[in-house]
Image 1 (tube, rainbow, N blue to C red):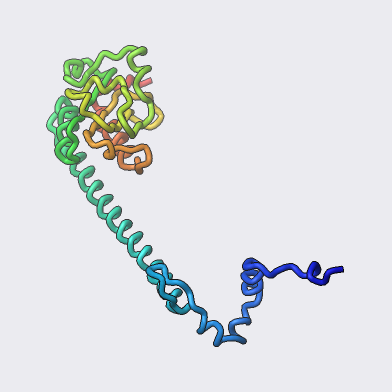
Image 2: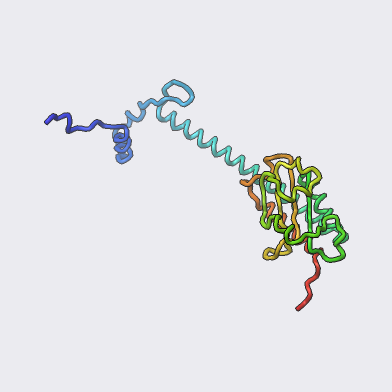
Length: 230
């Protein structure tokens, strides 16, 4: 039998596995570790293993710095949004009458959040609010084409776009159903539209929009008929 057939060539995987399973190897051959030369990712020159480790550490630190900066920016953005949301609902609380609420909500959203177009429709209101510009006679068929859940993303020919003065300018939208409480059916829909296709995206965090819809629904529920006691 050919003795060469009894021996398999050593592969790089074999060497890597041996080194991984023999942690004391480089302790016994410390000089070998110091003499290892690697190619630099920034050029063709050879660098020591220690230099390579320093480069990797610097890269990790740089990545962590970028992540930290992004987190700080996100934190500042969230604080700014929370401040705007607080100011919006302070304005609603200061409204002198319920008749002012729908128009005030729209104007404050446009002003505080820099939204070029905001639309609002409400239905099932108490008789004294039936003449509001935002009041709509919505039959069951009309309501069936409106979303019952928050939508955030590109405009896709939604029926509510017809409420905008310039529907063709809307590139991304947020549709917020309004409820007096979480388990109640919607009595309105708030439409936020932007000419920036990236303003409202399906992948974005929608907590702010959800809170906006909940608070707007609670504020505007004052326009609904009073429930008769049992």
